[in-house]
Length: 87
Image 1 (cartoon, one colour):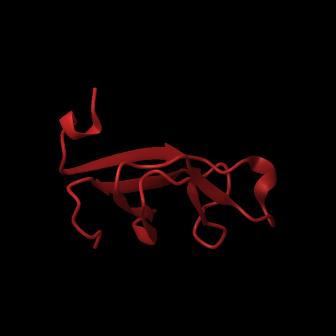
Image 2: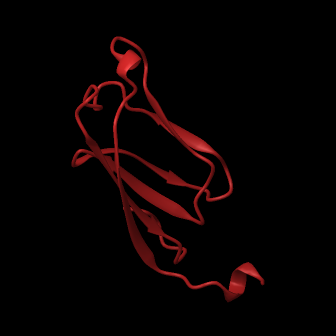
Image 3: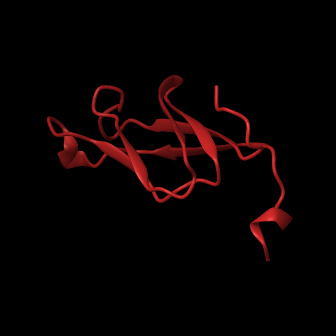
């Protein structure tokens, strides 16, 4: 299937996650293998970054925003593959 045959538009994804118990006092990163076009990324309601260029792997340093284990963190991602600039 050609990428041109895939649907376009905006989609939201969310995931609950916990930091590893031994991560206290260490750097914590989220890494993504790629997205189709552009995205805005939120952790616990706070924007942690944007990314445009769907074919490249990328990540964010979330050390200052992640709640320590065993607390739960909520990751929300707004993906826009319509070709518009991510806002």
